[in-house]
Image 1 (cartoon, rainbow, N blue to C red):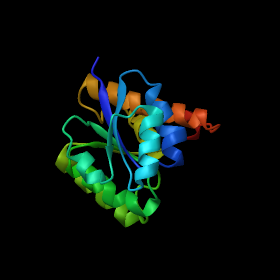
Image 2: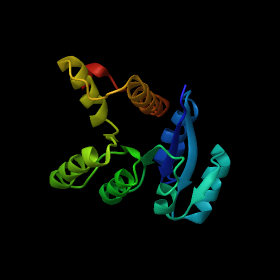
Image 3: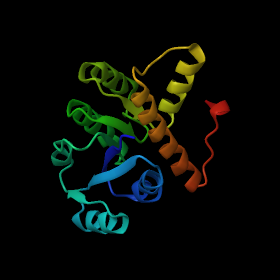
Image 4: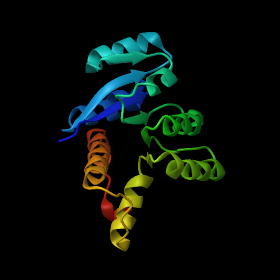
Length: 173
């Protein structure tokens, strides 16, 4: 089984109590790097969760060829720019919601996605997108490995929600 190597941008609460524990508990996913501008918090979180690579500049992390996907766990106003930079670096993106501050900004991300052959996913909306694709008989992914990879990321999202006392139900989507 192929291992998905993830880099996380942001070392705050959602990273520490959501994304990192979920990824750590998901087979086939390895957290390879973390980036945050706060060096002290970055060192603490990387040490606590055993993340091997640390970056104070997330764009340096995006240059790493061994990172397949990125979780964006920063304040909302950074989401769009970081998502664009991550997609252009060839990384798949799991972005905390909202992916952008306005609908127009969010729409512009969908234009970039096919051009760079990567996928952008938001915390809740992406689960609904894949459920809709399944319901409608569409095939948004092209290989079995892509399906497995997305399933791992969705599983991590569900674990994160579950660990934080949130409920995510397919029937709500």
